[in-house]
Amino acid sequence: MTRILVISPSGEVYDHDNVRWYDYLNLASHIDHYHNIGDAFVFDSSLKLLNFDHIEALPIDRVDRAAIDRFNAEFDYVFLRGSNYVHAEMDWERTSEVLRRLKIPVLAFGIGAQAPVSGGLQLSDDTKTVMRLIADSTTSMGVRGSYSAEVMHGLGIKNVRIIGCPTAFRANKPDLRITLPPLDQIKTVGVTLRREVSDSYAQDIERYLNFHRDLVKAMADHFDATLMSQGEAEEKKLALGTPEQKAQAMAALRDNFWAREWFLDEQVEALYQSRMFYSDVVAEYEKLVRRLDLVLGYRLHGNLMALANGTPSIYFTYDSRTVEFAETFRIPSVDVFSGKDFRLEDYWEQSRFDRFNAAYAQTYVAMRDFLAENKVANKMQARPAPAAAPERRVA
Image (cartoon, rainbow, N blue to C red; front, side):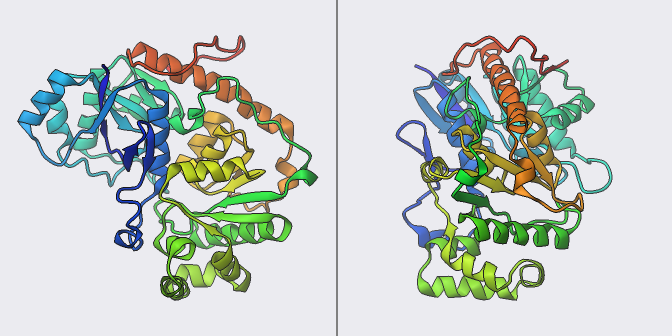
């Protein structure tokens, strides 16, 4: 029997390897709270790649010696759910104390570093310690891309493998390919929204929101568009709330300076009130992207969920995380701050998606090999890497 632990689970597990938000049926308890359901995509996708019989969360906010003794005796390994952990503001609580007492491997499952808009990346001693403890416990450490690998190298961590993100491989198809239909056959489009953004992420908020607004409007003008939220409170209320909550949400948006000045207009307000989608259940997003012809926009995991299901997707990059994802998987991408306008026709080229197809196959092999070399029981299929594929392990 394989028993595993997870750090930062981001949702409750049901039916063995499916994830939804905690107490998801009690929407009133968390409709005012922002939580990024994209983190649940990663958790759900991770479980779909692993062979295990039992899973529990590893608490990192306290040091419970009796519990840690039980974990050491009864569990095979713990994995850190892939996310953006390596940045200046990260609070690890008591993770380093917990990890020092663990005797089982700690698997970094596609973690990433976040570059600041300006200046060099400054990390706390606690972050450096946690990264080194994780790296020392396993054969290799899984990161999402080249920038994150470089940051690990700067910490003296050399056993790094670039594996992208489990969300890309959730369907467990080593031969997955995106094949574009003629553009005139595209009818339904999902726009992944990230209205709330920090100036720590985006270098020009006005440009970011103007570009975002224009994308929403352009897609709605030409296609049957669905606006895909991943957790902002106002968007959740507009998708699932009562009439009173929906009215509150629109009032809050109109009262927000950034939204009012740079994002909302009459058309966007109408779309927000009629085309919004949100769910606390990962499977509902998967159902949605499977019936769409195209997904594009600002959300890392919303876009990646589409690609994993064979739906074409285009990334809009605005920080080091989005750039790193697009580079790792060679996903067609638009630089929000390039000063250029976006025309879908310019990106509707099979050659662009063939680069993704090749990178996906290569990174699938890297992910499978990463799990194998760390002796993690998994469901990934053994297929040889493409003959021309370069090695993605970073020495």
